[in-house]
Image 1 (cartoon, rainbow, N blue to C red):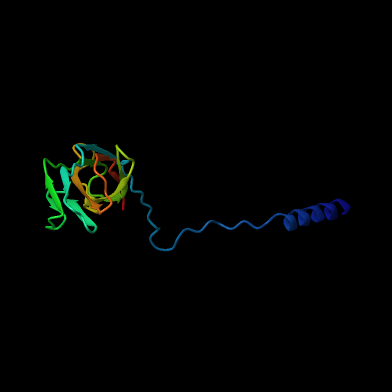
Image 2 (cartoon, rainbow, N blue to C red):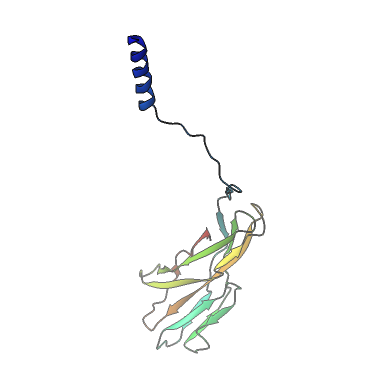
Length: 172
């Protein structure tokens, strides 16, 4: 009888210290779905340059804007006689590659053009599209042009001004 009592006490101890195990239960109804969109990294290349041509200062009395559209159309100070523009102009062409049907934001940041003679600067503001939708994956990519504008004031000195056109792209 003593062995039976010890065995019963041992069995009771095991039952008390062992947690009760419940059977697993699944989701009632349809389980949630999972998705992942995988896209190619973007690449951006450029060819050509942004060239405003030759601008002749003719008694500039106030700030005048010279703008070159992304379609390579020059506006030389909105018709003022204080500036005279001539010579060939050009705009750079950018090519962005990524994943088909994705919208890409075109980020344009102002930069300075520096006079190689005296170090003075002109602020250059790029212009053009704000976003593009990729029509293919990878090559040939999507081409777009970037124009820009500069402001010429009475204190602007003569010389050749040069700098960079700052453009980046990112998926929306």
